[in-house]
Length: 279
Image 1 (spheres, rainbow, N blue to C red):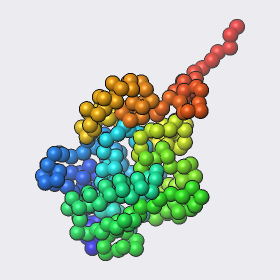
Image 2: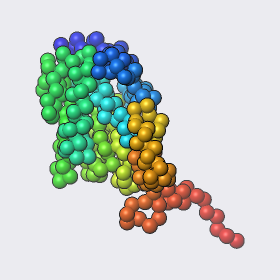
Image 3: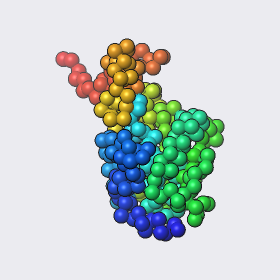
Image 4: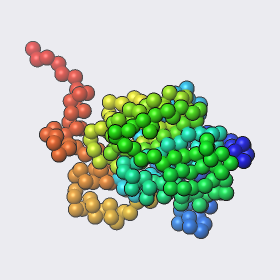
């Protein structure tokens, strides 16, 4: 069964957007109100399609406002990766155990049930696996523990995919250990989240490590999935340039933390400025 499912989906290996288009009954049944991925989701899927031709790992970080469909995209990526790579290792984590269990992992269950590949896979509370090879062909939901980051070590299979949900809150220790899995060419590391903190490794994907990451910032107002009425109320109540709207609508990091006097964007502008000595 394992070889069969890869053979059936081999032409989707470098085209996850086509896999998503063909794997669900868009416009029908429970998807009657949806005709397919949003524009930003399609952009990320297009990026991932180039991963297998790279001689290094692909890192993609997406900071967004609320309601744009981040967890749905994560579910599609998991299904695509498991259907197009033999015996892959997929690790999924989130900012908290409840987030991982009740939102991220639950979303995978939803899309599994809607997919054309549903008969081949089984979903449990911690593992999503190919029925023919449950021990070696799976995605695992693993809550992080700061004191025991080694749970994310040893991910060195030929086909590796790591996904972070609400990545702003995942501690640096987990990011550091995950780096060890990125020595495999074609490995994928996707970090999604609302940009709630202007410090930490998720923020640095858009800052000092931006040369390592392909980044995307998604404004909820540009997403067909987001609740435009709620967003309009937030903008009216808090103001366009408030940190509340920057984080929850614009997909931008806050200007300053509670203990920071100088906003981070002012610091970054200063770093890039050339100062000539006065004469």
